[in-house]
Length: 97
Image 1 (cartoon, one colour):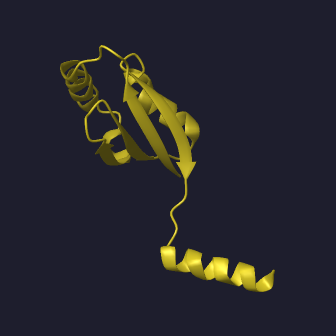
Image 2 (cartoon, rainbow, N blue to C red):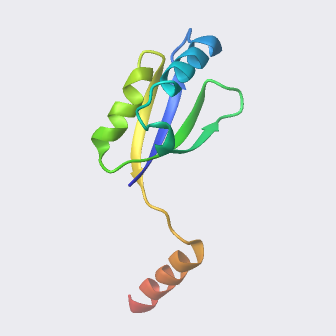
Image 3 (tube, rainbow, N blue to C red):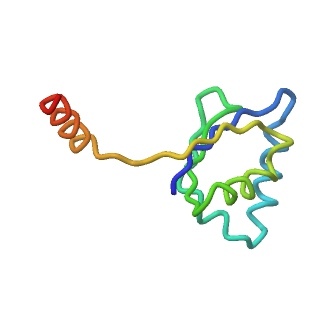
């Protein structure tokens, strides 16, 4: 299952604090790093999102909890769709209506 995990740094959180925490967590052999499929930062900093693969939602909590004192999280399960297939499906839906 793929999860969209949007983060926003709390006011007063510094880049150094985040860097230290990421490096600290990366040094722990827990297998979490391989589950993070991509890391996106919003222009301006202090916010962004991760795309994380996990078997169950509890796994996501375990991955994000070490950062919860530095940033807030908004998490959603997502599905991946082919644009062309989705458009074809919608056309068929309208045709059948």
